[in-house]
Image 1 (cartoon, rainbow, N blue to C red):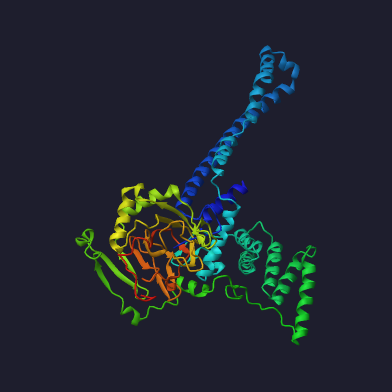
Image 2: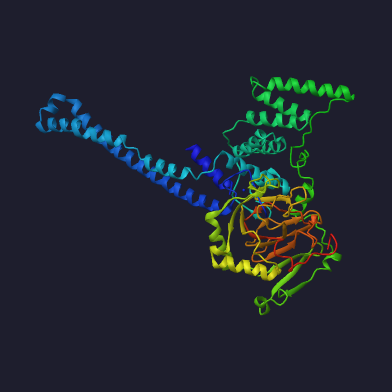
Length: 538
């Protein structure tokens, strides 16, 4: 039963721009909604099981009460009781037939239906990797949006307050996930939160000693020896026989006093301030623009000042008098002037968006990136979402959207990639990347035979409550999703050289579900639609 409830909790919790999470299966809100209905069905099945058990127990109790009264009479005078021929007959009947029926009743297992239902649905349950991915998604959101563990634990996210609370055991499991990944920074934050809630009187399965064990060693790994010693002393006081605590304490003390002697410093007791976000610095990772990228996701560090804003305009766009746009031109807004990024309003109707979602849902699979060396599509840890590829033959709506993209951009989509539809769950993201292939990866699109990706057309198919912006760290721009709109930019200069300023990222979705569809337009076929420039940066 406990394992079943654990499954349900994490199914609800992991409900994990361009795109990725460690979880292979549940990186899409669309697919995770199925888990909600699965859980509802299992709860009903559980109630049916409880009802059957209660009915069975009531029948057994009725038998016991009846036989209790009967045996009280029969044992008071066995010979006298059996002297009556009816009593003798009924005794034979009870022992031969009725007790066998009772035995059959007791042997009935009302849990069979529930177990069968569980077995049917178990194949769709999250696994260990999904649970780990969900935990890491929360940590990713915690970092990007600078949220402390208390905020997550109490369901206090920007713009909303939820009843989705994390218990002591949940926080402990979060910390343990980080610890097992040698991520001591997050292990400290979540073990500290678990300890805080436990000290506040919250009940838990995990012991205080276990939390202090992980917390003290993680703090040591973060280089804070005085606090590691203080926490380990608390652990020893609680559990003097702990197999590691005594040895760790002696080791930490020797190490600290050695450092103090070498630096000729006096011992300073550990800070009494509780560990919180900002106590320790987050370790650097592979992404050089991490801080800029995350700041833009939070709406900080935007470089759109008044001088730049004065150079942005809105206009009606008819695709150079395209017949399909003459009577109803597109509304075009400048998002950035150089490189030129524009947003088109009312590109997709609600009905078209729903049809695209409907076509994509059964095909959603882990989003991929193209290997720059081989040109083969593969999954990557920096892209978390589910995506599907749709072609014009799938439905008239897709053919119509492809034609509309061609009309708006003036570029042929005959050599473009299929329409890619992506759905991001909470924590879904795509870290900073280029859409075009660079000179050090000449074979990225060789198999397609259509040249490099000259432009990107990105449709936003939902509004997002919080997070999910498309950001450009190089020049400090952030574009927020607005349902039915689309943004367009060129990845290459007219010379065919890559515009490295277009390195961009899809920020993690903090609250909500993000649906996008995009068209990557290639060079081949654009020779007369976008003629080559005279200089490298035309």
